[in-house]
Image 1 (tube, rainbow, N blue to C red):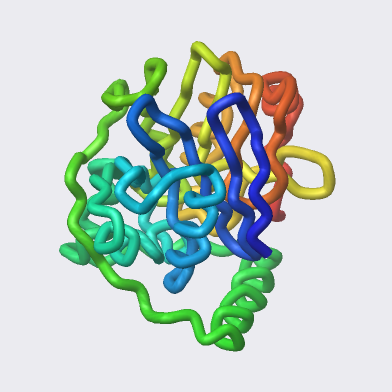
Image 2 (cartoon, rainbow, N blue to C red; image 1 turned 90 degrees about the vertical axis):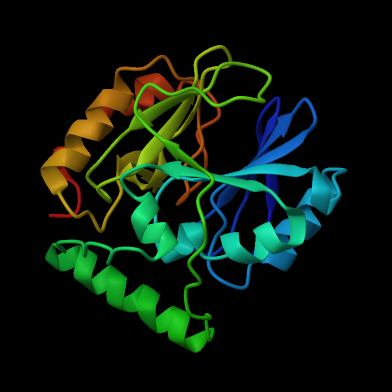
Amino acid sequence: MDHLTQVAPRVWQLAFLVGHVHFVRLPDGYALIDTAVPGSAPTILDALARLGGGSRDLRQIVLTHSHIDHMGSAADLVEATGARVLAGAVDAPFIRGAAPEPQPVYTAPERALHEQIMAGFSEADVRPLQHLSVDVDLHDGDTIDGWDEPVHVLHVPGHTPGSIALHLPSSGVLFPGDIVATAQGRVILGPFNVDRAQAIASFRRMASLEVEALCVPHGPPVSKGAGEVLRAAAPENDWL
């Protein structure tokens, strides 16, 4: 599945079976939010071409965190495009391979889902993870240069220690990373967290923002009224 859907005026979701990615049109090209599993680069570059961009038009790759379904194709894409890589400062050592990645603490339903996903990876012969350099370490409160509008970086720990979200307040777009997912028509807490309480606190922080469009890596996007949907969610009750 590689369906390309416009979520907001300058934002498109490229859907994969595991780990959607998002393109954002910049004044001089495109940014990519996350990169799906290893081996996804050809599909991502094909989608970029469908948007009218060549490989050198991919200017930035922003990794919301260090998991394989988010950074998996980053090294291949950097080689093909020369894009700069930006990631949360706390997760950057895991992305670079300089430190071991902390493991999630699974609830019983999460463990069953994780085993199902891993079986799918094995069946699809997903390649091993390739680490890569991070050009810019991002911190809470940073802004990202080169976009049409201000991009606010939020440190939203819990899923991983250094997970980040991107908030575009002018257009009301939020890229929450894996703290937030959608399923069965509602917004839920993303599974597989290293610290569930931290993840819920990060979820609630994002729910306090003014958001119109929610661009999640897992599940369909929310194109309208996302702030109200986030505030109505009950992440404390998910995955128990």
